[in-house]
Length: 604
Image (cartoon, rainbow, N blue to C red; front, side):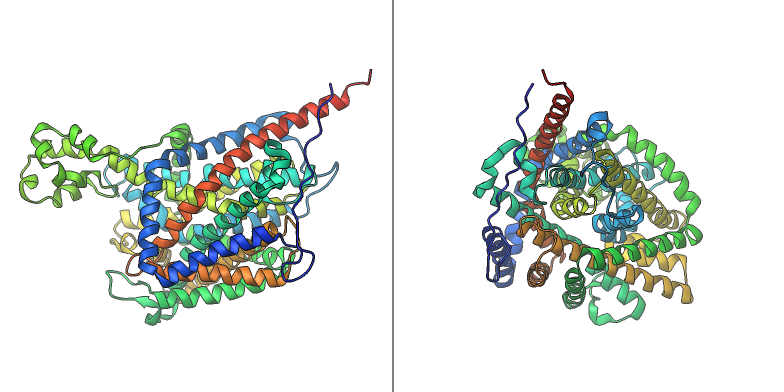
């Protein structure tokens, strides 16, 4: 049986001379114009940009929250099947006998630093502490917030947000790109992953759109990561030096102000551009190795001085709980609860007061907080009625929580996936499909679990035993790590470890930013591994402008609000592209299997 050969004749027209030599002019210009338009909007009309992005974001979440949840669950199960099938799992991404370019240590270091480095620093303590105080099990009323009983469900969702699902998002993109690049000698660019579905049509303007969506998602995903990281970098500098000019001291707890954030951003991005100019073989590789070494040292500090036995027992029980609830976590999506639905679910005595009782739908409110906030006739309802009211609002609470927490993470990882996926593909030539999936999903997930339980478990234990006395819970998310260190250590050791953390945050940020710049230029150049220095500098400056203007556009709100909203909006189109990538990859693997089988049959 004759099997038609795969389409590999990808044509991406590039400029032969001038500033855009060796770049695709449509991809470069459209991507830059979109980002410049966003920068000008946020710069000239910051209040309008912030409000509009917020409204668009919430409207999108009301309609597509379930889509984000279900397709992310699908990604995880899709990769599991691909890895387990013998024929697909053993396929080498390269020529016969080809060996990997990087050692396992460097390979893991680079994937770890690019994939979740800054996130693990920012949320190592903030995520477990936050989910210990609010998660779907707590919202249902089954357990009390910040109690011993809430630890298990808190870590269930911590593992969800930083485990197999998160890394599956990266690997869907990375595996698709690597497979076509190294088995079919196609350009390492986003449109290559859709050739089994669209064939020659991918050479049209449709292919340009696909690549532009990848660039836009990358810019916004990296922007959110750097925004969080710079905020923690300033928190760390304040913890070490006490320089208050970088901080807003008017709130309940100190938080980085706009001046500090912009100053930190300029410093980090300057270093990132310098590193990006040096290329992946030098700058990124050496920084990634340094990141991993410093991360191990920080982990050992928590093992020795933190609550290691508490973390050890938590890790085991939390991992089992996570696996038992894996399917429900993958596909359990909530929809918005309308005011009419909420009113209809209320007990008769409360229905006339439906408008005054709408706080029962609030995603972050406990029953006690809901009751404490009532006034007038609503406050006079008896306890049983109020419990029934709170139960009636559970659908709204669960949707609001999921949209504001889990779906934010999925959109973040999806927006990050063109960058991380393409970067993983660049460093994974010569590895098998199964090795790629196991190495890039299972291994880093287990490290994330250990990291979150050792660092986050120490923070929870300090609060449970009363040693922290609410100091960690009360700190801002980006300051929680330094507050936890302050509860564990003192004197010169505290100063030394805090300085090391600031250096680690800085190197993680530089690694993420320079890798992102390299990836953007790879897409722009039609998949070329080596790109022009001037274009790396230009995209570094554009990335700096996007982050800086969106941080400023938030006004008196949380500086990250505008960045988060823009990222969730920008991630949705690329989510559709990723779904198509899965279909295309399944078709490619199946058809390649048929071709191999046909090739082995003797000629008649």
